[in-house]
Image 1 (cartoon, rainbow, N blue to C red):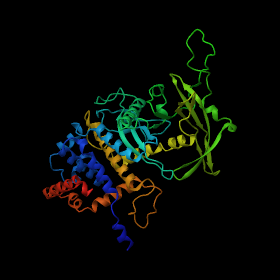
Image 2 (cartoon, rainbow, N blue to C red; image 1 turned 60 degrees about the vertical axis):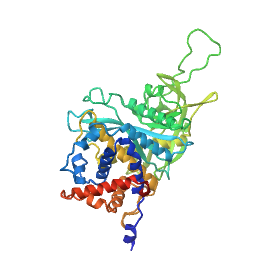
Image 3 (cartoon, rainbow, N blue to C red; image 1 turned 180 degrees about the vertical axis):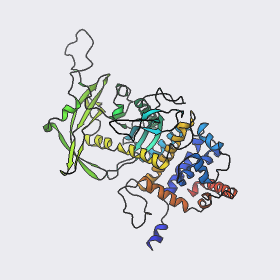
Image 4 (cartoon, rainbow, N blue to C red; image 1 turned 120 degrees about the horizontal axis):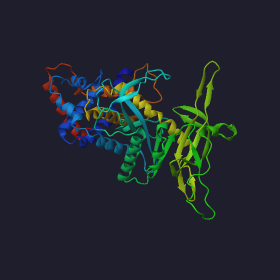
Amino acid sequence: MKDTLETQITPVLLPELLQLLEGARDCFGQERVFRRALALSFAEFFTLGRHTITQLLRTLGAVEQDWTATYRLFSAGRFDEALAGQYLFKQTLQQVPETEPYLLTSDAVHIYRTGMEVAGSSWVRAPNTAPFNRGLQRGQRFVEIAWLTPNEASYRRAVPLRWLPAVTEKAVPSDATPCKEWEAGLQGVQWVRESLDAAGRSTQRLVAIFDGAYDTQGIWREVPEQTTLVVRCAKNRALYYLPESKATPGPGAPRKYGERAPLPREFIHKRKHLQALDLEIRGQVRHLKYRLVGPVLVEGAPDRPLFLIAVAGQTWGSKKRRHYRKPAYFLINALHQGDAWVLPYSVKQVLEWAWQRWECEVGHRELKSTLQIGSKQCWGPHSAFAAVQWGVWLYGLCVLAAYRAWGVTRGPRRQGRWYRHARRWSCASMWNELRAELWAVGEFSPLCMPTLDKWLKKETWLTGLGNALADPALI
C-alpha cells in the first residue's frame, strides 16, 4: 500500500522546470531553435552515459539524422549565454525581497581537456597529483557567478547564473578575451549590479563573497556602488590604519595611509582579545573565536576603508583522532555613516556567508560528475565555451526549480523505504525525481525508445509535447 501511495505522488518539480523552460523561449530567437534546445534539454536529463552530443542524439533516437543543426546551436551563437543568464537572474529576484541583500559568490573552475588545440585551453594544475609535486594538465578556466539562496535551517544552495571565460595569455586563441581571475569575477559583480539597477532595485545591497585569489588592489579600487565584498585574505597581508587628520594645514599633500598595522595573523595571538561566536552551519554549531579590526587600508586603494575579521584556528576531536581548522582572515569594505566608517553587517552574518561559499564548490562537483559539462565534442573558438555554458545554465534552471518546489531542506518523497531522508536534497535525488516525474508522462515513453524505425512517430509525439509546453494552462 505504501509503494502504491508513493507512486501516486503529485509531480512538483516538473511543473516548475517546465515553467522556467517555457519562459526562456525568447532566449533562442527562433521557434525551431527553441524546440531543438528543448529536446536537447530532455536528452540531458535522460542520458545515463557520457553527455556528448552524439549520445544526446542517440537518447532522442535521432543519431541517424542530420546532426549539423544541433552543433550549430553552439558554434553559430544560437544559444546566447548572456541573454540566458539574464533570464535566470530575473527569475532569482522573485526569491529575494528588495529589503534583503542579494548574495553572490564567485570562484574559478577548470574544465579539463585532452586536446592540445581546444580553443581557450592552456596548461593548468592537475587535480589528482601530489600537493608537494604538482603536475600539469590541459584545461579551460571559467569564473562562476552564482546566487546563494536564502538561509533555511542553516542550509543554502548555489544557483549558477553565468560562467565567464577567464583564459590566460598563453591559451589557444578563441573568441574569449584573456583576463585574470579577479578581473572576470569583478566583471560578474558589475554585471549583477547593473542588472539590479535595470530591474528597479538600485537601493538593494549586493554582497559578493570571494576567496583569496580576489584579494588584489584592483578589485578594491573598482567596487560598484551599493556593493559589499567579503574577500578572504592572506595571513601576512600588509594593512595600514587610517591617516590622522591634520589639525592645521601645512605644506605638502595629506597622507594617504596611517601607521602600519600588525599582520592579520598577529591579531589572534592573544586569546584575551578574541570574542566568542556560535555559528550554525549545515546543521552543526561551530564555536568560533574572532577579532574585528578596522577600519584599515590596503596599499593601492587608499580611498576604500576595510574591516578585518580574523578567525582563530580550531582544534577538536579525541586524542587518537585530532582535527584542526586553520585560521581564516576576511576583508570587508566599510560603509560610511555620518562621520564614521562602520561594518555594514554583523560579524555573524559575514562569517555565515563566507562559510556558505562552499556551496559553489559543491555545484562544481555536481556539474562535472552528473552533467559532464566538458564531454561535448565542441572545440571551436565559440562552441568550446558555449557548450560548457549551456550545461551550466540548464543545471541552474534545475536547481532553481527544485528550490521553488522543495526549498532547501525538504526534498522528494519518492525515495523508497530504505532511504533515510537527508537534511537537504542532493543533486542525485533531484535528477532521480525529475526522471521519475518525466517517465510518468506518457509522451516520454516512446521518446526514449532506442529503436530508429519509429522516429516519425516519435517526432509526432515531440511536436505534441512542444504544443503542450506552449499552452500556459497545461504548465
